[in-house]
Image (cartoon, rainbow, N blue to C red; front, top):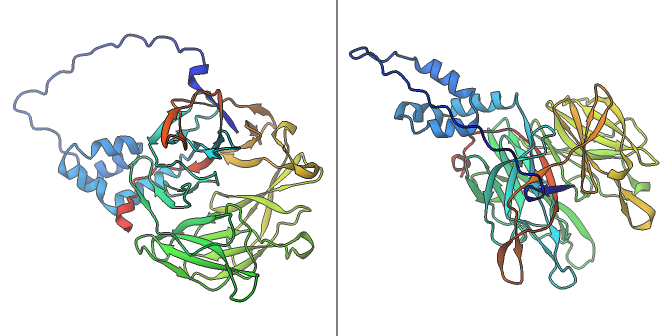
Amino acid sequence: MAAKRCADLPASPQSPKKIVRSVAEPWPGLPLPYIPDGLIFKILARLPTKSVIRFRSVCKAWLAIISSQPFVDAHLEISKLRPTMLIVPGEYSYRPEREGKTAFWMRFYKYNNGSIRAELVHSEQFPRGIAQWTQPLHCDGLILTLTRDQEIMIRNPLTGEFIFLPKGSHNNNKHHRVGFGFDPCSSKYKVARFFYQREYGTSESTCRFEVLTLGSNLWRQTADPPYPILAVTPAHVCGFIYWRVDLPLEMDPKVLVRFSLADETFSLIPYPPCNARPVGFIELDSKLCCSCFSKPCGVVEMWTCDNTDMPTWTRLCTVLLPQETFVPAPGGFFRAPKVTFYGKDLLIIGDHKLYQYSIGTGQVKKVAVAVENLWYYHPGSNKYQPYLGKEVAFETVNYVESLVQIRGYT
């Protein structure tokens, strides 16, 4: 998917002149009205995160309220009622025959429901840039990304807090994917990763698995997964992380591997009852949602699965996709677009294009998205430089604002 730079857009009209109004002073001698702490709690919990962060400096009483865990939890639950989506500019090729790929300065932009101009949420210089893009992961306002050195970073874009996790076990597979989620039993955030380890004296590799609890700074190896895991981005739903199996088509067991963050064990979930492999996984209304592309490419079925002991799949919709969202691949194949939800609409992302599909009306519209002030990492000079191109590939991730403090788990 590609975004336009704001420099390529027409200038906006001048802002209207500000109107200054005088505010009457309180009547001398009258005490200020008393507002119960409980009412202040309820009012502040409904405000946007940036406003709440500013209000921490009003007084010590407000700081104590906003810093308390009950307030952070209440604010998060209300924020979940107004989810949004972040746009994260990714890698692009710069003299690939000599220097390989480079990455952009880390920036998070908020998608504004089809508005051409995306709102910058957070920006920061990042040494050597971001890794070749895998999908960013989100949980409760925290974003997990990988660096070019395969380090794992977790950040809250609005509070500015971030941490780097220790490196896990060596992976013989060059493709690196992790899962990230919240364990409701221990009230802890956990990161899970698979890796392939070569057996001593053989050339065969075995799929292993390990988990890190945020705050422990230690990777713990679990039992091996029941099947080798495919290096694609997993999905976290209500304390479970879902992975695809890495086996040839003729050996496909037609199941997903589900990992429990609570007891750190594996279970198997059957495919949805359709004629195609599920490929894209997201969380939708506390359910697992996946995309199934039919053959020939052009139609996608969206399925959801409940989180019961006997999971049941339900087909949400069937959508005819714009052909220009399919990317040609070697061998005459096509790379299917990414399909995700934005409210009650579908977002279709492929070949540097973004479309918004209304499930209610069946209408599809192309969306132009603009991001500004992009800088990229230049490996030759080991510095960041302004990006002068007109378009740039980027990733998207569903997101809710939060005050979750990473340092509370470290």
